[in-house]
Length: 195
Image (cartoon, rainbow, N blue to C red):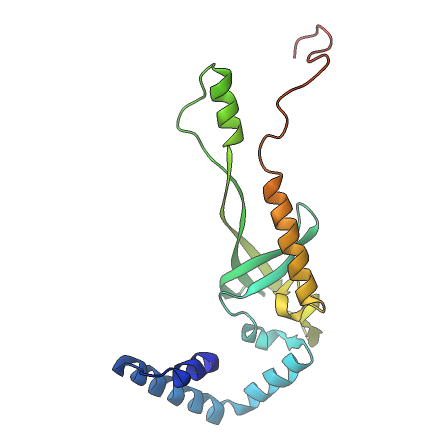
């Protein structure tokens, strides 16, 4: 909100609607600073140390933020984008999305043509947005943000090198999708037993 306000202030030739937005945001920011200055100071102090308490966790649960987590299938670091979150039942429930291979469901079964079957096999997976749900249980005391099950990527100790590694891994993963071998030498079927 503060960043948006600063960007709007810096914009030349603001429209009447933008002027009204700026007035409303300024009034809201003034109210927050006046009535909630102790909470804002607590959040600022904790975030400076890259720490958080359970009650103030919403301060880092900003929709659109990239979060770092461990992909349970591959046991590798992964990135998801926070869509929204709910609070209750002893935890914060985060709804996130990321890009992944998704199964394409053909409308009809393949015909017996080898070309048709091969074409469908290579196009069975496409990339798309996949949603996932994560939970961060309530906790007591102060914890380091990067010890949470998932946390904003900006709190990783080596954010830039991690971003580069994740992008390189993603590019490699995309390159490996699909069929890469179509010719084989040797025995294709061994034995005479039925499957």
